[in-house]
Each structure stands twice: as C-alpha cells, then as structure tokens.
Amino acid sequence: MIAWTDRHCRFFHRLITRRTRLYTEMLTTGALLHGDVPRHLDFDAVEHPVALQLGGSEPADLARCARLAQQWGYDEVNLNCGCPSERVQRGAFGACLMAEPHLVGDCLAAMRDAVDIPVTIKHRIGIDRIESYDFVRDFVGTVAARSGVQVFIVHARNAWLQGLSPKENRDIPPLRHAFVHRLKQDFPALTLVVNGGLATAAQIDDQLRQVDGVMVGRAAYHDPWAMSDWDARWLGDHAQPRERLQVEQTMVDYMQRQGEHGVPWPHIARHMLGLWHGQPGARHWRRVWSDHRLAQHAPTAVHALAHRSAGRQEEVA
Image (cartoon, rainbow, N blue to C red; front, side):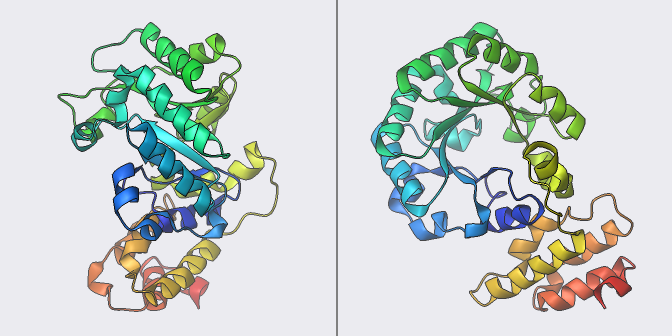
C-alpha cells in the first residue's frame, strides 16, 4: 500500500472505524535512518491503534527503526516480507526474504529485543513457482522458533519475483486461503491473520471461523464505507457511527487545517474518492473532488460544488 495508506488516508479511515487496526504504508529502514523522520513517522493521535510497517533486511537497522516506532507512539511494528516489486527486491527485502527464513527470524528477534510493543510479520504463502504448503509451513515454523514472534499476517498468494508486476502479483497468482487455515491448525498457539481477495462481511465472517483475524487492503480503500459496521460487527464497539456527510465535512475541515501547513487539498481528497461508492450521484461527486483544475479553490467551495453536481444541494446548505 505504498503511497496509499499515508497519514491522511489513515485519518480518513479512522473517521469510519474507531477500532480497526490501521497499518502505515511500508517505509524502508533507509528512509527512516537517513531521511526526514518526522515527515515519515508523524501521525494524528486519532489513528490509534496504528502499526508501522517496515521494509528492510539488516537486523541492526530494523532494531533502530523499531525503536523509532516505539518512540513515536506506534502500537505495533510490522516487518513486510510480502512486497514483490523490483525496487524492493533490489534492496534485498520484501517477498524475496521468504527464501531466507533464518535471516527473517534474526531480523524479527532484533526488533523484539529493541522494543516493548508487539512485533509482527506480513508475508506471502510462497515465492515464484514454489506452490507447496510445506514451504510456507517451514517458513512460519522457522521464523517463529527463531524470533518468538506470535503474529503472522499471511497474504494468501505466491509472490512471483520475476515476470509479474506488483499489480499482476495481486491478481494472477491464485488465492489459497486454505494454506492459511492449515497454518492455524499446525500452529494453534500463533495468531494467524489472512489477507488477500477479501471484501465482503460474509467473506470475513467465513475466514474468522478458520483464523484469528483478517486484513483488508484495497477493497477497503476503494469502498471505505464498508468499514462503517466493523466496530459493532466484530470489535464490540456499538457506538453510533458517523454519517457519510459528517465524515466528509470532517475531512473538509481537516483539509482546511492541513492547507495552512502547506498540504494541497488534492493530496488528501484522493483518499476519500470512494466515500459515496454505490450511492446516487457518486460519479459526479467523485469527478469534482478529483478535478485538479479546482486545486486553488478552498475545500469548502469544492465540497459544495461536489454536492451540487451530485444533486445533494440541500445536504450541504
């Protein structure tokens, strides 16, 4: 979710679900150790619970970055061993690390030794044409024994390191949720979270009968209102959820504040383009908010224009 789940996206999602755990986009150890740390790690307190996702393969560097995560107040730090992009592979991390479970275990052990917050891992079920369950079983077993990590978030597809783009890697390798279910059977003491191809509440319910948790990525990004009943349905929070228009108004106020700090509103509005997904007038509303010719207008003016275009004048009067 690089360039997707930034702090503005997470602020928006937190307006829809209070309890769901949010994950940052993957940040590399190099970016944190040699870049602008506040720019990368600052987040709004409303985002809790929020996990920092790291990409790296040097235990000492990952330990230093885990300490930064704890210092900045993150609730969890996660090592990404699932990203298949060529850029990530050139840095010798992401999905290619699944070929080196002992190194992954050492990385996670160093991170756990450095912090008190939970350390977790996200990975695939295999790499390239390795489609045997034994591969991912042995990977999980080795990593768990070597590091003591208890939470494994498993994207239930292989990562093809050659021949497929990152986008194709999300669609072409077949989903094998049953592999994650078997992992839970073989490692009942571990927390197994399944990821990949899950969008509807019925699908999530079905998975929760097999494993401990579900991670939803792009489906939640494109149809964020699907998260509006998650707190009550699965997380025991039955507080009255916000209305869509209330969420949008809060985002308009947020864009106004961020604009005072030099953040153009289109950088934020792009994350909420799915807010009215499936509702009458949604296409017209989305077209206005994505029109960069309006970038010099105030967010309040764009908000009003979007609803006039969608035929909702009375709602924003």
